[in-house]
Image 1 (spheres, one colour):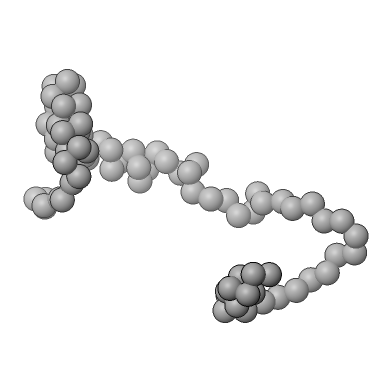
Image 2: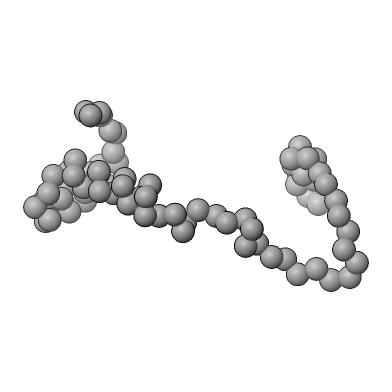
Length: 77
């Protein structure tokens, strides 16, 4: 598939040079980078189940909506 990408000038020059150094084309470099990003980079996705926070004292459950939390944040709490 053909498409047009708008790349930062410095990024374009570096990618073009890297492709040339490897005897490849810019298209092949971009395809390889995208495959790596989408298929090999699964560990970079956050795993919220691993989050642990120490709790001291009595455990208190509270539930607030995103809007309520935003209000607290904006109030400086």
